[in-house]
Length: 112
Image: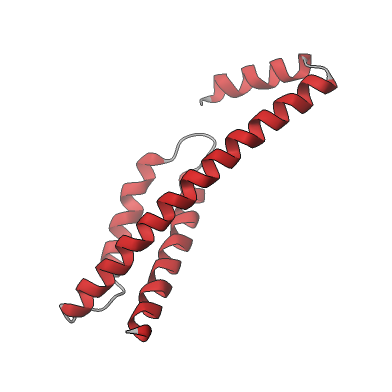
């Protein structure tokens, strides 16, 4: 979605009555729920690979934390930010994902 799409959405939104707005809200929430499910599945898959990478690093006697790799990831994801998601917001989201990945790798080490 671009700025023009948002303006169009808001212009049309003002023309809807209360019932139509409530129906729209319900439809948007359903779409959001579907996206949340897909995101959770992708995060689970990413976490699986993170655990496997941690195990390979351990086998190679490498540290699990790699600031160079995390900087590389940060640079790569910037190109995926599109309005309304800013690059700084996407960076913060990925910082959290990477923090959790490290924590899960650490837990995996402690369990094995």
